Length: 540
Image (cartoon, rainbow, N blue to C red; front, side):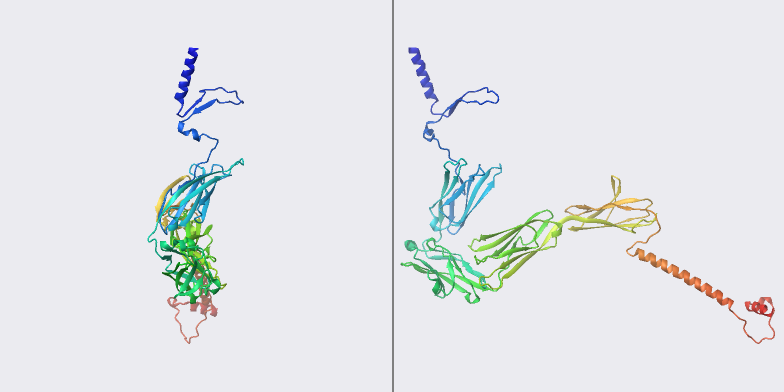
């Protein structure tokens, strides 16, 4: 009995010794029948501090915030990225931001290890009101088995500094150009003295003035001389306003007034100069010049200001080189810009081509649309193309005659070197250089080709064959005409010569004796002439 009690005490002590650390107990080896199952006996211990965490829940990993801390100056443009793993592609997590700071863009991206991650990027302008605020991103996972969804979040605290703070100050553009007959959106924000913060409520209205005369009142549009709309939230110190159907008479300096149904009433000193133009500004091409090698992937960006948000410009590319993606983006000064990104692969055919982007503005008043264009000329470098060889004289050549070979090719930059090869079956032998290669007195049939090179690459002509046989030929672009001319001249000379000979012969036969009154004529044979032969024949 004492021995049994001792063993039980030792076992209890050993069990206590194993407590307070992570340890699993299981078989070291087990044999299983093929096609059957196996049950693995298993138990574990863990550190005492984790006992309360041992429950039936299993949460997904928390999302990641980038950057993990936010410390900015007031007015800075802030982009926060929230990322959460998406192991189940059919049920990716849903990402939400708290508070609602502005528009967010969600995408499902791929990591380098081929796993997926859901991301959400929120962009907003830091203000004094964000200071000390807790910004959270929550990832919510809907389960495939229909059980209760799981949600996890990650947070940061915004640290926003302002200079100056606690005084009346408005922030807006100094100048803006507007297309006649269109609208203009004025990005605007403001600060007030700390003692008036409690007076900034829903009773406040935005008033825009010219020379202390109101032209737009957000609370009374009927009495406003200029039609428009308050787009911002005054309680968030956002006074962004759109003024419609701008005409040349509306070109002026505009001031902002904050008017609340309490003691908060203030005319801000800052002003914006609005200039109404007949034509919109030309779009901008980035890069402004295109100089690349053939085969390079090219991305051209066309940007055109969009002062009227309800009528942004339409961007078109000429010629149609490939796919383009058009988006409306924010500038740092809060103005909008329409962009179009064109992507294509540079080729020889694009060299010297004029690539244009046209921005077409439809006006708010229904008048004729305005279109402006910006262009660039593509400079595409490429290796020699269309390399050919011309032979003079063409066709079969007589043995021993001279033959001229000329190599031509198109390239950018221009061809730097020409190399001539004699082709004899699989063997190719260098025989000369230069664009023109002369062969003196070939005695047998030969095959040649030329190779052209520049700093991009090389080109090669097809093999040409020279047949040594036939009659002599002349070399030149008019060799056929020259042969015909020579033959014609030779024939003409022969005909003329034959006619002259025939004429002279006939003339001799028609000669008659001259009737000369002479009684005596010398019969000396030394003085005999053909005429005497004729007289003699007549006297017989």
